[in-house]
Image (spheres, one colour):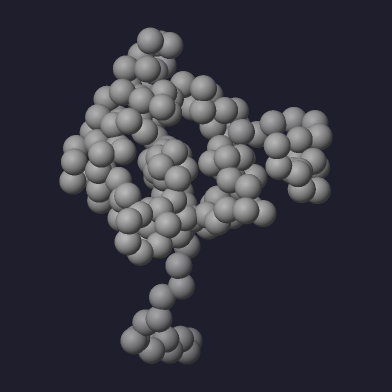
Length: 159
């Protein structure tokens, strides 16, 4: 077992849990991770050349976060750094592992879409929820962005 950080000790000793904590804990128990890994493994990067691949379960978990919360790849990466609940869901130890970056997540999602695995995951999840008499309404998070405009500010009319 890895040594706990001060932040993880503090987080575990809090008085209440958040809705995000509860939802991610629910999905952590609901999703058949081993089965989903078997489905993706034949298509996943084997790491014979180039950099070492990210653990497949970590990538699937990151994809689940992205889909549940309706996040872009960049926002998913940021949320994992910002949210202890999401970091905990990923089972990442920040002392020895890094969070997959947005580009890695985009490539992974393309792999799932190309092979129809994303649709299979959606069907599997819907069926698993149906057995519990539940339905998923995916959320969305809007990222505010500052954009440069080429327009000059309007002059105020004098009265």
